[in-house]
Amino acid sequence: MLFLFLIFLLIPYIGINQISQFRNYSLFDPSLSVDSWMPFVPWMILIYFSLYLYYPLSAWYGIGDDRRVREMFVFHQGMFTVSACIYLIFLVAPVEVHLREQITEQELQGTGLLSTFYSMLHLGDAPYNAWPSLHVVQSFLILKVLERWNVWSHKIQILAWFAWFLMMISIMTTKQHFFFDLITGLITAIYSWLYWIKPSLESCHDNLWSEKLQSSRDD
Image (cartoon, rainbow, N blue to C red; front, side, top):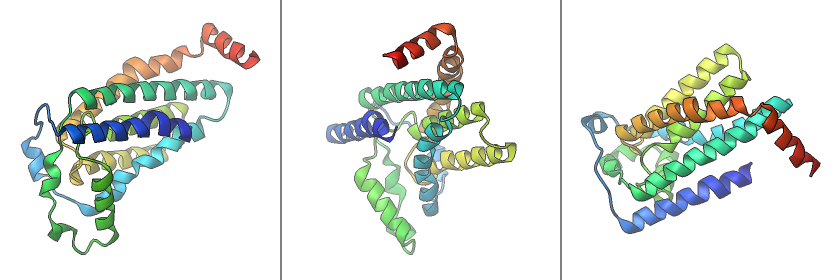
């Protein structure tokens, strides 16, 4: 699953990001007043990076009975497809996130390792690939499928959603995204879950899907 992540998610993201930087073009400026008064909070880059802890969860907890295994494969196909649609938006409707200009050297002084993290982030991730926010979309979908599988206690689920809320806020407090990116990401995530991925998970247990799965195993 990690290999598939590299092929279908990470490599296209980097490629489109570099293309957008080379073109140096923004279709529009989605900035709002909230983007200016939202404070820069250096330590929240740790929360921002927590996205990468989400990716293995759906694969790890998807290993179980036949029903959950089916849903795991269908879920990842759906998430890859949603991500591909977002990549297309990145490519045809690029937006430069000029919020990094609000970060001053004084604000990073004394932050130690955090300053290094920001330098690495800004070096490897050009200020494009903005909307809708992949951070919001992918993490939301992963938490929803884990919630569907009921793999955690109610208290753990509450903590997980609180951590997700902090990560959603972190895309703004690290000056990586506009508020517009957050909202469009949330709309995309909810719509994709309700009208695409969730129905696909429910339909993957019908007889036709079972026959196809059994046929692939026999082959």
